[in-house]
Amino acid sequence: MIPDSQIEAWLREDVGHHDVTNQVPGETTGRLVAKEDGVVAGLDAARAVFEYLGVEVVDSASAGDRVDTGEAVLEVAGPARDVLRGERVAVNVAGHASGVATKTRRAVEAARTESDDVRVAATRKTTPGLRGVEKRAVVAGGGDTHRLDLSHMVMIKDNHVAEMGLESAVEHFRERASFATKVEVEVEDPADAPRAAEAGADIVLLDNMDPATTERAVGLLRETAADLGREVLAEASGGITVETVPDYAATGVDVVSMGSLTHSAPTLDLSFRTG
Image (cartoon, rainbow, N blue to C red; front, side, top):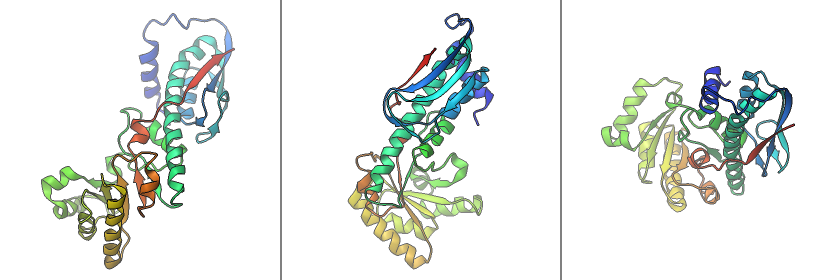
């Protein structure tokens, strides 16, 4: 759901207080068209923008659909002034989201060349105000959202460990978190992966390790988890690209997380045409 307040803010930013550019009489139709192949997302946001302006959405592709160059992904009809007022916001939001979905699909397909089980996840490296749009785009591309916000999981990062120590940090946050909240610990040395598991981590994030080091850390973690008699997930993160995803997927991790899915995805080129 895109709240009206969000749509109003987008339109206020683009339309301003004295829009004469779009003072066009009559009724018209419009099509949002892909100018390159990709995976579409963000169409729910584009739809919400047009519907807020009283423009009817006649037809729409579904999030996650592959589209070819020249294919219409959204069609609208209504007053020309309102169709034109919604055009740029709809193009920008859908184009950005579709870029995220397209990059995510590429990363997932790359991971599948080595593993059918590893998850490709996003991170909290999202654009302020657009996290919901971007996270839904990751899902449309076949990825995992990871944490939607800080309340979804306790992640003990390097700064927490520096301030409190690894074991003390896990104990501290375990006492404050709900029984239903998982605890993840970030480590940068393979030897710390077993320590994190022994301290009570549900997930261990292997940060900024190359694939060979990651594989060694996964082996140590699996041995410790077996001794503990419980499952501890392994996540690889830090500078992973679409090109290196297969190398990390082959290490045995359960999750490969990539901030670049949201913070560096190129926009999918879309164009809006009326008439």
